[in-house]
Length: 269
Image (cartoon, rainbow, N blue to C red):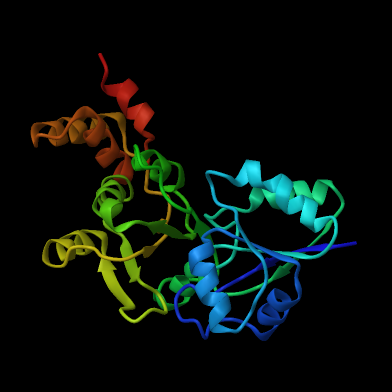
């Protein structure tokens, strides 16, 4: 039975590839790649000459039929632009379809930005929650869902959305410890460690560039639940500081042990 190989490729430094990955890529009938231009550069670097086809978010459903036709006759490798396919990258629909059709699906492990960032962050790595890319609109809603999790949080972000995401974090999670990991394994690799508020201050001095992986401390424990009167007073105080109802509710929720919807209900007369 032909095999679909899920192959990890370098996230930056081209030396970060396994001998097994190179062997598999030389032996397959086709490489389905998120970015054929970058894949071509990588394969030529290692003198690998195999047919390439594109498989990215916009054409993934349409190109699956082509890839599965080749797979029916021989082995196929799936690679992403960087790292492991399917981790915040295309690949999941193809993997599911290959499994359903009875093909063998085999991982060829390799680099991954979120695990690389986690182990150099200085934050606990024994339990973590990977969040991928936050939604472009209302990232605060994602953070509200994980605010009580004690596991370390790991997520990706593009430079032009980094400030918005950090502001949402600060508002919902409070001023936790964070590591900003930029351009991992590349020439301008940088890991900055500090608080979320400190990270926002740093962006004033050094505008963000490159791709970021953020590692954020988990919740230190459930806050003691405040009495109604204390919640009301804190909410009024936040509103008097000029915060919107939504911002005030989120701010109080972080410290009070109340959910934002509960605060809305309590303060809506």
